[in-house]
Length: 393
Image (cartoon, rainbow, N blue to C red; front, side, top):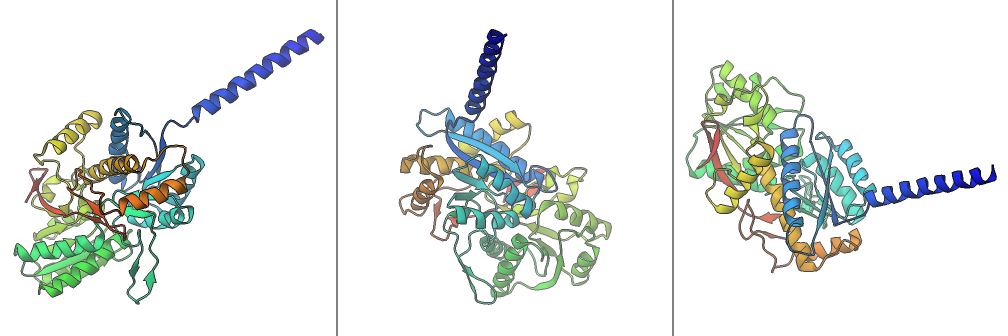
């Protein structure tokens, strides 16, 4: 009996040891840990899924290079919700992330970037374009919003989009009367509208109607009728693709056919479920990336992405892909290793991204540089939807 107990104890000890080794092995770090957060499900899932796909593809390529820099990547879903985004960030902290690539949309990223600033974790967002994400500006009351020195953007910021849109519409003489419909409950939409309005006034663009909405708005006929009655021949939409798809359908319902001009949040409208893509014919928007570009880098990216995921990559995918390669170049330049703390990595990456010597050539821009404000220097391009595809203008 004593021998049986000894054998049983030995067997149990071996089982416990094997479980321990298995669990420890499963969590064994193999590279610098990069977390991602975005809407993989929900109304903005086109953005988050594109970011996840392209980031994973870039990490596979980077880890196959003959380099000492290796990455581990893990993406969490936030459903485009700020509270869920913070919860997702806490899960990634439990995983012991050292860098955050995210979050994807502005509201959640603003909340999470407050957390990463407190934790000294370097943050590079592919697509959260609000200045609330990075801080370091004066609000409408003249109060200084503290700069989050650890947070940088791969996308161009909302002010740049608003200003560039007004400039383009004015220079190309696209309209005599302009209407705007924007989401006054959303940092992204409001930030773009404010800069568009200022630049439009400076250029004597005639804004004849301004309609607002919220995240819950599904009926836009009041805003559209106001624009129609004011004689607007162009409607500027600094909003995301889901409400934009409703606006295009409802404009047709009231027999209103102006030009529509959007920004990067409208990228993805052609893939909205049950949306008649013919309604988007002629829609113009600003974007840092066009999948039909003829350069070799874009062609290779688009071909591989389509083979891997069965879809044409949008600008969110391109920005995420650029994020990973920019982080790779910066880590290589700074000699960053996976045994460094997140705080050590944060210090080194801030120094690299703000260095005058650091430039990055990617899918979404050539010679990209970052200022101490966290904003990237690159120019948007205009595209128009023709026959269900984005075509450069």
